[in-house]
Length: 105
Image (tube, rainbow, N blue to C red):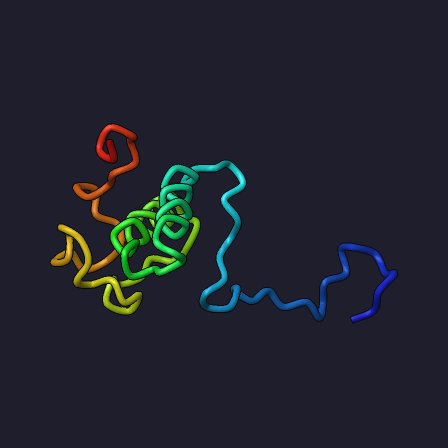
């Protein structure tokens, strides 16, 4: 690849997907509420994530619903037995979306 050439000359450029485990930032704060709940849970539990697994699952579910991460099975994320939706296979389950603040009160 030669730098300094015209931008339309992309003969050697190959687009690759991001590495597994990396995902786009939430620039529009679509899942900020779930993220803040998780961070606060970690703070309240001396950074022990075990106590916050249900909140973690809600956060990841939000990210999958909003297209901020690849759709994954809960089992592959280690969250298959967490929460009331343990029987649902993949992340997006429209019946389990809990993004409004009344469900967390």
